[in-house]
Structures are given as C-alpha cells and as structure tokens.
Length: 258
Image (cartoon, rainbow, N blue to C red; front, side, top):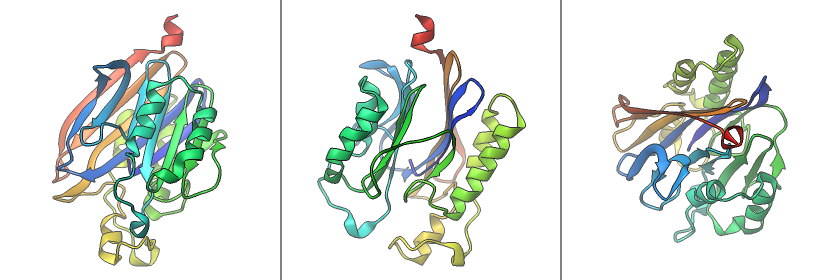
C-alpha cells in the first residue's frame, strides 16, 4: 500500500472510511480481495510471495494497512515481511492500542514502515521511522511512503478530493472515491521530495495513480464500516493502467449479527 486517505470518526454512524492505492511490481504474485480460506472472517488480498497483506478488514470490524517508508539507503535484506504486521492484527483479537505498543517494541526488526490498525472504537498509528505509537483522533489523514500527513503533492491532492467526496453525500460514493484515487497528475519538480531515488524516479512516483510496465498501481481499495455493516471494494489494474477486475464485499458486522 503506497497511498491511503482515512476519515476517522468524522461521519455520523460511519467510524471509518479508507481509500487507498497499492503500488507494486506487476510480476509479484497476488490474490484478489476476498475471504481467506483458512480464516474466512478476514477479507483482504494476499501477497503470495511473503504471505501477508497490505490492507484488509474482518467481519468483526478490525482493519489494518501498511505502507513502506521510502529510504533506499536503510533497506536491509532478510528482514521480516511488513505485510505480516497487517495479517497478524487481522488474525488476532489484541486491541489496536496494545497491538501498536507491541509492534513498537519489535519494530526495528523490519525495514521502514507505517502501520495503521483499528476497530470500530479506536485507530492507532505507528511508524518505525517516527515517534511512539499514537491514537488517531477524529479527522481526515493521509499516508504514503513517509510519515503520516507528510505534505507530498499527491497526498494533498488526494486528501482534498477525498474530503470533497465525503462532504457531497451522506453515504460515501464508492465510484467517486475510486475516481479520486485515479489521479495521474505528476508533480512539478520543485514540489518533489528527495527520498534518495533520483529525480526521474521521484517524478514517476509523484502521481497518486502510477502507470508503468513493471511497477505501478496494482489496485485501488475503498473500505468503510457503518453502524451495522462492513464494506470493501477493490478495483484492479494492469500495467497499462486499464481495469482488470473488481471485487465488492459487504457483510454484517459480527457484533451486529449477535
């Protein structure tokens, strides 16, 4: 996951809305979002190379996502998969605050990451390249490959578009949120960050939606939890940026069913 915008307890009866793009090498094997065979209460895609996931939710209203922290000079081979941080949270029942605190204790074992974990009550953020884990108060947040709310151009544009969509209708407009994620605008050179990958690569990575033959936006996801239901919508894309499939999941919260 390389770009995510989140509305945390800003809408009436909707604790969380997330719109996110996953950028990855097209050759990396992946499954579409859906129930995991061994854990059908988890709804998520899966990275078949390392076994984890970049983003997902459960029928009990737990959700999590991870982004890499872009700093090529600090990458260490052989570190644990950052996608397991999401998968382990979704598989378990540890409250978000306790899980974030536990990951803070072990976070240096991983390459750089940003982790968001939450449920219908709380949302927590931790980066092993930032400060201590913290609860997210009600508001709209944006995350890419630096710390939370770092004002990269694509984050500012997507966050503004996301907020506009949420103001427009009482219920989140899924197609409009997908459109907000589809922005291919490249930032001006003067606005680009310097993350150590070179100017050409910074340009390539500066759009919210990235199109490239070997690397680009593989999927866009919109996730929401309302008073009684959970929703996860995933749109997938090929190397040329064209749509290649879509999955739509909606189900009652397990607590609501009981």
